Image 1 (cartoon, rainbow, N blue to C red):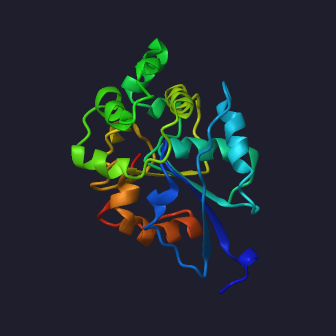
Image 2 (tube, one colour; image 1 turned 60 degrees about the vertical axis):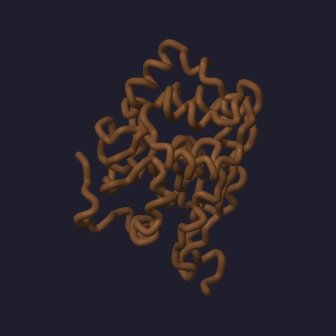
Length: 235
């Protein structure tokens, strides 16, 4: 086993309200990588996205880490990368600029309708996915719900507001974007320059973990992926 300082340190940020258990089946070679799951914290009242990202960054203890974020966690790691040097910045099932948000989210941002989502309900995930985001199969909803760890109203209000109102005009050139062609939350048609995973949905970090175990080591080490039939580069 390599010394700790010789390993590549990989920090994982889960999706909105999700527990780091969504990464429980992600396995990287232990002779090369050391994985550090990150957790959501309850935001302060009116805390900016930038200040929140700096707060989470305090848990990153190694220089030039690899930051990987899923969904809203992908937005967080992009904000974190503005305040530290990173070896690799990877987002999964997420967006890398405001233009990639689906029209319904842009509409919710412009009209303020996101404030009407009943985040105090224990089953807010079902409501959000079906009403605010679109069709979501019950099987996938149940699968995702078992990984939800935060139902705090203040957190949910803050997270949804900052997701739909995220302002990013130009993507960070360092971002490596992995996206499923069947993503229900952020449809592929709005995404540019991503590695497309055939059959991948918004929760593919959970149910397509074998794809990530096969390809993440190469992506982290080289920043590139040898394209196979199941993936393609989207222009």
